[in-house]
Amino acid sequence: MTPPQDTKNRLIEAASELFYTNGFETTNIEQILQRSGISRPTLYVHFASKDSLLVAALEHQHQQRVASLDRWVHSRAEEPVEQVLSVFDWLANWHETGGWRGCAFVNAAAEVVLTTHPAREVIRNHKRWLREYLTQLAADAGLDQPNSLGPQLMLLIDGANARMLVEGDLCAAQDARKAATVLIQHNTIMEDPA
Image 1 (spheres, rainbow, N blue to C red):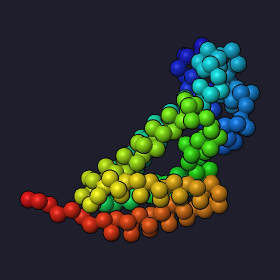
Image 2 (tube, rainbow, N blue to C red; image 1 turned 90 degrees about the horizontal axis):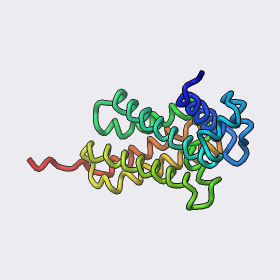
Image 3 (cartoon, rainbow, N blue to C red; image 1 turned 120 degrees about the vertical axis):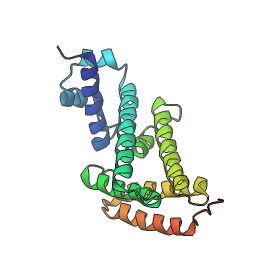
Image 4 (cartoon, rainbow, N blue to C red; image 1 turned 60 degrees about the vertical axis):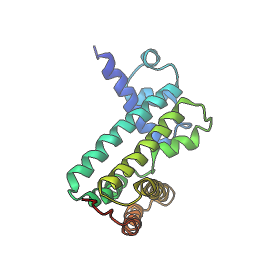
């Protein structure tokens, strides 16, 4: 017998993949059941509705993105400024290896228009986390005004994801990296007071 956590994870992974590939609205429960190999009654043991499965799928994707990005940044770059820019290298790699529909969180927000839907909070939390992560990298790099720079870098990421979704442009993240380099050059490195 499959442990309940394994069953739940199979459902989440199947839903994550289908929601990203086909969209939330066009993916139906039957497709998720077929992809996961789980029965309908078992699905409803773990999730009350398709909406609750979307919340779990987005939380799962958030955890994956956090781990993947942080691992990439700290294994690919030693210099703090290069760590900031390596975020865009990670994004380019992701676009090439599976992120062909851009940002799953923005896509979900476009489909789930009710602002009180529980998925919207997961989406906001993910975007907030990424903005704060970029801000912290900028602060760690000693860049001036990291609280302004982090959100500006976030806009570049969102723009690159949008270009990937709309145009399938694999150069979008590289172009965003070039723009980030210009932003960083205009943010002088703070003087060490010592």
